[in-house]
Amino acid sequence: MFQDRIRENYDGLTPGFRRLADFLMTNTLDAAFLTATELSRRVGVDPATVVRFAQELDYSGYRELSREIKHYVRDQVTATYRKAADAGTAEQLLMSLVENAQQNLQHFVTTDLAGVAKAVEILKDAPHIWIVADFMGYDIANFMAKSFKNLGFSAAAFYPSMSETASAVSNMKEGEILLAIVNDGPSVDSGYAVRMAKEKGLKTICITGTGVVLPAREAETTVIVPVKTPAGVPSFGTEMQILSLIWEALATRRKEETAEHYKTQQENMDKLLKLRAETPEYEVASPQEMWSKIGRAHV
Image (cartoon, rainbow, N blue to C red; front, top):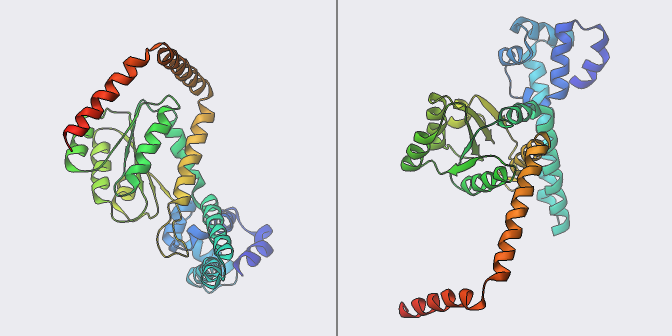
């Protein structure tokens, strides 16, 4: 296997070859989908160096090495899928799904964790965070907007319809952030929102299950999250884990701001509880009685 060949030859590799070896060993899933030219750009060497590197490992060229990497990745993924298909009990099925989720997260850690780190650096000082998503991702966008607000951020989510996008873009200001959440599907309208936000001078980030959709191609920073599952439909589990990871990282980086926000929030809660305790019972009961009468009138 290519890992064995790399380990056996590593000490004698040139600096350029070592960079390629390091990338293949730590970004195996990503490497499986890269051409020699794309790999050379990611590592910072010329395409000819990629070919010579493969030959140094006793392959005929990069194509043969790439084929072996693809087989390795496919075998790792299909092994988990076979377990799910062969599961005889609900417990066995759940265990195979847990293994797939762990595998997805591990693949992500070895391929695009640097992208998350970049997203955190962009978000940590954001004057305002706009979040766009369509389909079921819109509910996730609303949840993340509220979560960011709990850290003291100014944040808002919007659905990428023509009217909502037009309204949101008109209120965007240079230096703010647009975060697009794309699980699966073309998400063309979200892509338009990303493009228009860039034109207004916003920094743009896309969290997605595929790098070929329009929002991913338009965004300045794209984080690709594994979404494949034995169920045959895209999962949002790993995506939610990554979004949670970003939130926790921001909470850690902004400890003082977060603590101050939570302190103020608790003080307001205490005031509301005090007001509720001091409010006469008839003040609470009267509106309820009125709403009840209105409801009966419309039946």
